[in-house]
Length: 340
Image 1: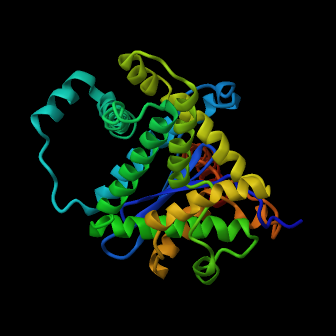
Image 2 (image 1 turned 30 degrees about the vertical axis):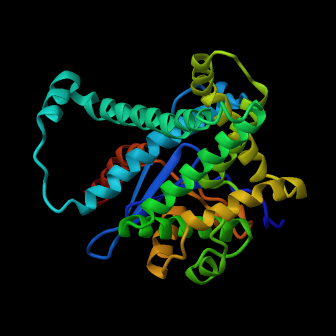
């Protein structure tokens, strides 16, 4: 049975000199270390919310968005640890947090970082465009036109942000790894054998990309704010903040649909997001592709998925530990009995 065009369900993210790949609750982080070797870290991430909540449309999009931020931050921290030039001395704030929260300190810091990132993103990309467009309220009477202008400002801010960070050398390499991530997934989903040559020839654009998600968020926000109107300026700001989870949830449903259908209309609607990916994905070199392949193979049995061979279960770190604890002592005991 051909799998060409079918969604594999795996997703990923570029990190510092590497790639994170996730398949359901299992994820891997492949990093090209300074000595040239590839380090692959395998672990699990159950995320927030129950399985029942994860099946509810829109709600699952909000959960997925928060989960991706938390996991992404964790994987970035892991990849950066290989490139710390020297062991940094803990700051006073680090010491206080460690004393207050003990073993939970890392999770608390991660939570604060993610929360701060969300607040800043909402302030810059949702609230700031509203105030910028509101400056034209004395000139433009139509709320519909103002909503479109607000959306255009939001899009320009995002593009400007991407262009600005793309000037950084490290970010340019991250964008190359981002391209390698897409190429690997496209290679697998197009039914090709996962090797450097096939990955290199695959597209660096993908319908389920986070860049496309951000563009859809901006378009959906325009539609929401055209139809949801209030007279109070304060309430307008409140609505823009309060509706962020709903907008993210609706955008997720579109990205999810786009990744699982060949519908022509959905394909046309997905094209602007694919064009925007030209800013956030760059052509990787072969060494980057090798890292991406290692990350994919750690969490996804692509040969079985393509029907090339029987499936092999990918064991989680905990399952491997359980096997070692149970099987190894038994085998040692057998050897000792045989020698006796």
